[in-house]
Image (cartoon, rainbow, N blue to C red; front, side, top):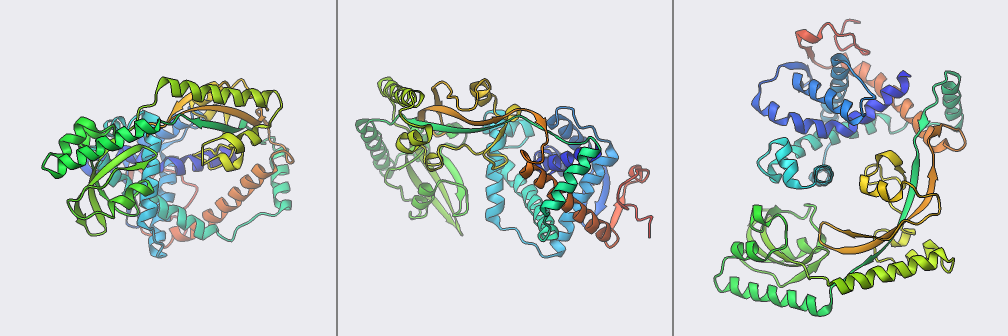
Length: 458
């Protein structure tokens, strides 16, 4: 079923360009690879092809196999888009790049367990070194996406086109299999520290502030006192931040209110309580260090929070209140409270999760639930140290099935639109190939491509 194999591959390549390119960055720096092809001013290395193939195989769980020539054509297509994005004067804001880089770091950290493991896995010196390289890659990725959007911005599909597309697949017995999906909502209660404990932390930070102002080392105080897990690596130094850097709002506001050498008053964020020292003002950036201290939460407070959420769950199960009403009345998670607790898939930005592609810990909690069921109450903790108890509600659940024009109309509409856009980009590519400098390495001149990359059909 070539249509869906191609579509899957294209979606995979868009998602994995960044992931794979990180693997090849060091090879590019060492300049030891052969050049497979030059497209405009962009090059594809032999190692790009090998490693991209491995990544596609890994991410598709072996369901997609691809030859060197097919992989090269995928990469040439991306380089063609990037080349003409520059020609078309498409711009990429630094804030866009920074946002993407931080999301990528968060994704990799979730995959590997910590930033340190990510850095070690890809052979970089530190997180900042990795971020600099990711920024280069994400800038090109953004150019590619914006050029595609420019090419296809006026493309749409009518209901009749969706029907024809669906019936065409049905006649060929090529209807896609729609995976099992779930829609989830959550109710969250946080275990807050007592006022006395918070006051103790603030008093401790004020004491540290006075000691540093009297001559003590901020760096040493950070090593001894900070609850920031990265303190052993950076001694509290956060590097240079700008107003566009993806730091929490309160942290940036305090950092940009200080004079050089000044230490802030203690202030609160979702991570705990901080003090910041501003080292230097560097143009639009600020080089800062911080000390983070997190108030301790007693076992008694944790038990009290758990008992409260279990009481709420009992009310829902007894029919005294609906789950939506309970979320609105009791939930303390600002991101989901006003949407009935609805969880959004961070990778697709949709309110649905493919059952077999969700984080293992979440899958374990909901895999046996039926629509309308509640999970057991469970403890959770954020990277910032916030402690909470949660319960998950199964809003809806669909099993694996062949696509249906009524039940899956929105998805089929998306497929039909994607196909039409793909055809538009293909037509554009065939025209642009003829006016773009392309030089294939000798090894790849024997390849048979779908498009005229060898420019034989003039």
